[in-house]
Amino acid sequence: MSNCDNCASSSNCNKKDKGCNKIESKYGNFKKIIGIISGKGGVGKSTVTGIIAVKLAKAGYKVGVLDGDITGPSMPRILGISNKRNLIVQKEGSEEVKFIPAETEFGIKVMSLNLMIESEDQPVIWRGPVINNVLNQMYVDAEWGDLDYLLIDMPPGTGDVALTVMQGIPLDGMVIVSTPQDMVSMIVKKVVVMAQKLKVNILGVVENMSYIKCEKCGEKIRVFSKKSAEEQAKYLNLPLLSEMPIDLELVENLENGTAEKYIYDNKDYDELMSKVCK
Ligand code: ADP
Image (cartoon, rainbow, N blue to C red; front, side, top):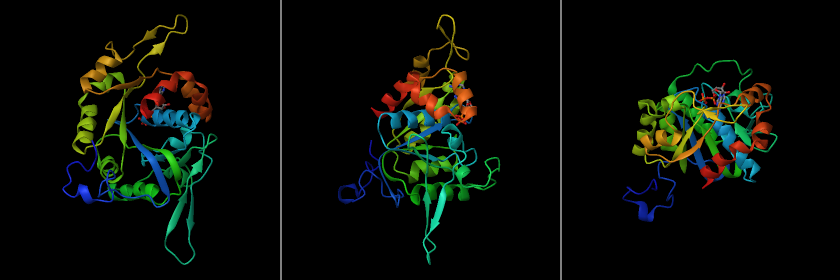
């Protein structure tokens, strides 16, 4: 459903399909903007964002990632660019600033607060309105250029910043990430209901850490819930985009800063990208 469906002026509006209250990027053109969200932190939302980004880049798309999880930004680590920086350029004699996204080995453009502060272990002790402004600025003032996909790693839950993204940024769709024990919880349901109320299209749900694969026989062992991922997704009335294993090799690569290459080469994660792109 379009954001404009309920608007009385939609027939003669020149911002059709973007929504008249949406903010615009000054230096970016995006064919699709997709938000990745979860009910709570720690379920793998940023990891899933990284996987989708790398697989899209591998498929030849131009991709950007906006790390909107301002108080827990982890995209630079996942994409192996913690040592890079988002440069801030100011025109002489003007207050206007422009941010330059950092680029990963495979050409993914990344904006993250962790690439702007001196050291990544410094906490961000800001209140909601300031965080909202930072997120908006990373969207509006960054030199994204022409991208096929902008992925936004959203903060977990239904708080202020998630509301800002859903209302202010012209999202084409949203991916919900959950773990088996949370799939049927009210925490995830709240995110679903919020998206529906704000008329944001939900592409589907990713069940992360669904199972471990037996190294000897390859059997999938569901550690957290006996119910299948399909059953869990059915409860939410959403398509299942992927069920992802607990992947210790991924964790090791995340720790070593080599996850981008690992994801690029690992065919197990191909399915997710193809469903998100559909
Ligand atoms: P969120 O963005 O939801 O807070 P993260 O993506 O940062 O979550 O992941 C939280 C932790 O779980 C990280 O340490 C990450 O390495 C780990 N993790 C995420 N997905 C998996 C997975 N499929 N297998 C093993 N560990 C994972």
